[in-house]
Length: 326
Image (spheres, rainbow, N blue to C red):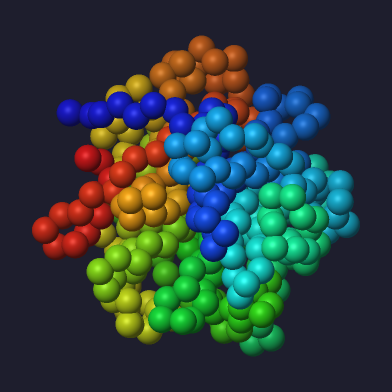
């Protein structure tokens, strides 16, 4: 039987929450378009902060960067993630390389000029760069980049068109985390039925390290009610650049069938709460949107603002694997 989860932050897709070394929790997400003809939306990076995760729901939301500040990144701006890397703050995000061309998307990076990501200014570092020996990465539709540290090595994962939307991994130097230091490695491509509904897609990677394992969640299929969350797992001390180090679960961890009154769960992030418990924050659409009574349901889902952030606690099974549909 499915369960119901209340909306955490309305109309914010691709939600990302992190806790900084300054003790603040930060929230960012894609800023939506309200219909195809909306002159705004997907054009800025927003940020909230609070001392607890729950308090983010009513925290003031600020625009920390806008596409009109860049000569290289234009809307559509998707899936920003705020990361503290090597003592500095960065936002990794996807943006178009040309004005109003939604399909000219690649990964980009901005760097905070100070130590306060909420109040200080930002510098545009441009499109993400691949190392010299990599002729594939960030050449033709890449997005949904995340960053994590495992055994003191820094990694980025992202989705890119490699025939289908696949998930790749590479290392970065924390002193210059806007360019890779290793060739990109394919981690997962859509292969199971639940990954290939309407469109074969793997995207939105999110990492969580727990009890000696690294879990990499990803989103699969098209962005309607078929959208769902899958999982890769590797040993924490394995060579993460070796595809054989990773195992993909044959079934998704969270689908619309697990939920009540919400559809298309996906594009999650992981963060520990004030008690040290893992929380996952994800987006989904509500019943009104599913029934096309929201005013946007007949348009392309790209222009539907009704994906809202929700959050739930991660629990664990006897084998140490995360349970998201509890």
